[in-house]
Image (cartoon, rainbow, N blue to C red; front, top):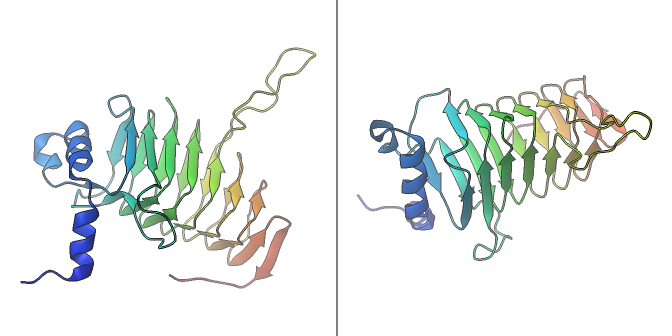
Length: 225
């Protein structure tokens, strides 16, 4: 059987060394040979032996794909993906981390990816406490999602920390438009569209809405990919 040009291209783009390395570090031999993780392009892998990667789904080939190129405008030679999981990352089904993304889960932090999770490229997910994504989430490019302010703001009265990290919870079937920022403590309901270039710093409790930085922009709206 002759391989299609598209399939052949995808096979060529796989970083075989990194794919073998990560699978055989994370899994026993009987599971590693299924290659549930596929690595594409230039990927920096950190803290492999410190972090935990837990699959709550059948282990099939490529159930988790890291660095996959899906945006034609990104430079495939110079756009590097960063995978730094020192905490725990739960995978509940097929997940794709696009080219140029940075996924960072700090020690003792927990990130959860629901089924059919897809972040297209060049986005940053920073987890110091807890970030949860439901099923069928689509994340566009140039996003920043972080559950921390990184630097501490300290009270001059009693020395207490005024800006602790707070969990982020993003529901199922949520589409986040490009260049958006999701800040700590945010809960987003199911069936929500976040408009491009939005900053979300408060909870979105409504369903079937388009939201932006200033709240709900349009109601009774669904989406499909």
